[in-house]
Image (cartoon, rainbow, N blue to C red):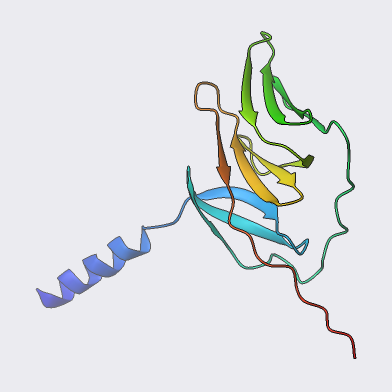
Length: 139
């Protein structure tokens, strides 16, 4: 009986898995997986050791999705649907966007990164955890 309970416990433990949101670029430019649920995010280890080129500083960043567009002006982030409806979030200094998954967009600012949920009727903006840039010391 104890062996059956132990096997059942091991099988049940193996079924618990953190949901994957997608991937993001951290502050040092490394690609990392993002796990969690809305508002509760955890970064995974870097996918590769390669550091990606820094994102260009673009004015009026725009990302076109299948049925919407995400863009930023000086102090707002705007999600505009195909039917011309809009959802606006107060956020200044947006420099770039990056798709995390079908329902999530990474919004990159000079001060940090955010996860924008673009699912219809579930739109929300959340701060992503960050990792500090690697310190470079000169000799």
